[in-house]
Image (tube, rainbow, N blue to C red):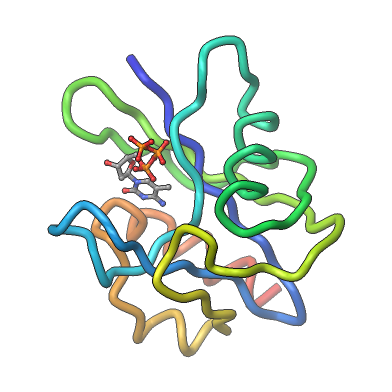
Length: 127
Ligand code: 523
């Protein structure tokens, strides 16, 4: 079973979403950025690597929230709150980035799997 990590970065009452470019069925839809854990990596290490590669930022921590999501038969994905240590996010691997508040989050065309985290994200944006 492979594992995918997705990171939620918060700032000023907003969470960072990224617009996918691939595959075609997910292109244009928004996600919490992340990717597959590589052999030997912890979730925290995978998040740090993926967000460095995709957004050019340094993050630390991995505070899991919401339910795990099964992706097909051989991948499971979990969401983590991470702390932004340094850098300003840039879309190095996405079509665009957007900081959204609780209200804007409702309007975003999220990838289906990430919708499982909406209740938890709403709570964190409210609290
Ligand atoms: N998701 C997903 N939501 C989400 C992420 C980060 C990933 O539904 N927030 C899915 C999309 C793919 C799988 O998880 O089916 C792997 O994500 P991907 O493609 O972002 O991971 P990478 O970059 O590690 O994979 P490769 O493109 O294969 O290198």
